Length: 94
Image (cartoon, rainbow, N blue to C red; front, side):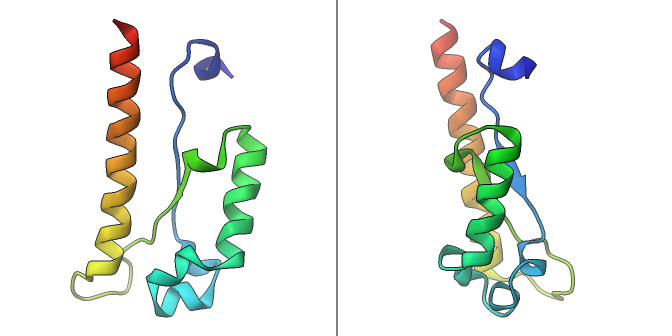
């Protein structure tokens, strides 16, 4: 993979995790305890050959009519991780 050769960090967002696990569909906090989500993250990690910590599950706003803190927090955590990856990459370039 080209990105690995030039040391660009690869981060994957796995979306629609509520489709993988009914418990997550009911309560997004279950993402941290769901075996189905863990298996999905493991599979993506294996297929793309990146560490599990570089695969971040997020739930899409799809049928919700209003913002929900737990869904937004999960998305913000993924964004925070992406920004930290960028910061680390840029700091290592100098």
